[in-house]
Each structure stands twice: as structure tokens, then as C-alpha cells.
Image 1 (spheres, rainbow, N blue to C red):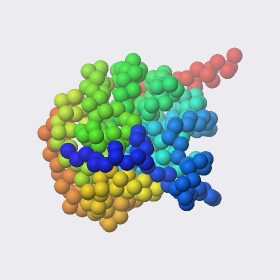
Image 2: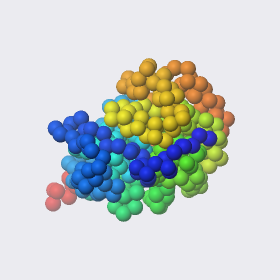
Image 3: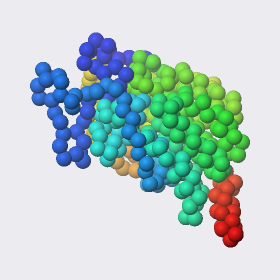
Image 4: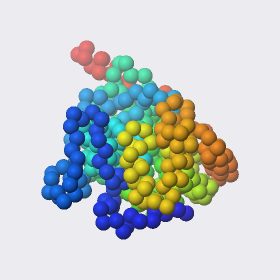
Length: 364
């Protein structure tokens, strides 16, 4: 396994954070820069603490306009993510809120306080046609702040109350707190969970996605969910050639033993501001192989670190990608054997019944 080489010896490295820089916000009229290193008391210098920002949006269900995503709708109780995954494509969305896609993405967490109330309102709307909704389509719904806020739990209660299908993707063991609700949803075929696991080397995880659950605990999540009758699979996202691709066979073997019913992956792509964030991280942590890794990423996307074409952007192309795809397919066929088919139940939705009851009561 390949581990980082020098981050512990760098006194300016922000331990516990993925990004080590604050990139420019392309939507901002002005950006602060530090021209003199000796000026240490300026207020714009990096604050290592996490700040919680509350908001009350008007909508919570988002239409997903991408054929690469298996679900047509998503809902995100939080914007920004303290997990700090350095490769996260969602970093760019933080710029719409006026913040940086770098450190501020993982330091300034926007909490949608009224998410559960909005969800129920939108599901009961006359225009709503039942479709599975994905939690964590953007940022992880079980990131650390969820332990205190319990917004994701409140949203799951709404899905259970209305018998509406929901998909979840997470890399945090906090999901096991909600086993009681998940088991009830599973009884009605209303939930499917994907656990994101990017590798097996803990030293790499600590810098690649520093505030996530350990890889060992994520495998335990799959085992616990399976033991409780909750269908789940593994998502290896992203695969970064030269960093974690060597873990594919063993990771899928362990996931299969834990009970994973499916396995999928994406290749890393560095869209927008994620490119400079990742490159800074890469050269600070893997100086001996940074050029090689960077070139492999470029080779996977036609000479660039990002490809926006649907159907290609998440899979990549080229000889390295073909090799990774073959290894993944062989490993999946060999180790993911509990491949029971799963179909979301859309017939038990109680929204229309609820609306009829409200209309009937209004007659009196």
C-alpha cells in the first residue's frame, strides 16, 4: 500500500483537513491574498475551527440532470462537508454560497434547519410523482454535525411516514444510529444504502478524507446493515491511479464478506476549483510520485484532469482506465456474490391518501 511521505513533518500543514488552501471564489468580486508571510494577524488568514451557518431554504428536493447518476432527485440537509475529502466534486458548489471550495468548504458548514418540514411539504404537493430521492447527492448527510442536528434522521422519519423510497450514500458510521428507522424502511423495500470506501490504507485515508470513519468501521457498517436486513452496497469513489487502485481486489473481497450486494466505482475527476485544491494536496503529501499520479489523471481524461462529457466524465478513458475496469469487473464477479435484485417500492406512498384526507376534512 502507498502511504503519504511528509505531511507530519510540515509545520504549516493543517492536520485534520483535506484541503490545505483556500482557492479563489470565481463568483466573488474581491479575493484576499497574503503577500507577506510575516503578517500573521490579518483576519483573513486561515481559521482552523469549524463554523456552523444556519439557513432556511425554500426548497429541498433537487432535480438531478445527469444520466451518470442513478436517481433523478436528491436532497441535501447540509452544504459544505467537514469530512474534508480533498477530491470532492461538491467543493465547487460552496462558491455559490460565497465561500471557497478549499478550506472553507470543510470549515463553513451550512445547515438547512427546515429540511424535514420542506421535504414533507414537497412530497405532499399535487405535482409530485413518486421517484426515489438520494440523500447525499452533494455532501454527506451523515457528516459530523448530523450527530448534533439530527436533520437526516428527521428526514428519514418523513420518508417512513409517507412510505416514500430513499437512497443513501455515506462514509460515516453515524448511519448506524438510525438503524431503527432504516429497518422499518427496509421492511417495505424503501431504502438502499451505498457505503463509500476508497481504499484500505489508513495513513492515506487520514489525509485523503481526514474526518471520515475508518475503512475498518465502514466495512462494519456494511456487515451491520446486512445483518439487520438493510440492502447495501459498496461505492469505491473515486479511484485515483497511483494512490488507491491497488486496493481494488482486497477491498471487494472484504466488502463481499461483509455482505455487500453491489459494487461500483468512479474515476477521480478534478472539476473546477477541485483541480488546484487536489494538486496542492498531492504535491505536499506525495512529492515522490506526484508527477506520475497527476499525469495518470490527465491520461484518464483526454489530457485534462476533468472531462464534463456525460457517460465519460466519471469513468474516464484510456489504457489505465481499461486496466482498472477489468480488475474491478473480475474482482466484483469473484467476491460480490450476494447479488439479490432490488427494486424500490413506489406503490405504498401515502402522499395521495394524505391529500385526500385533507380535502375531505376541509368539507367540514
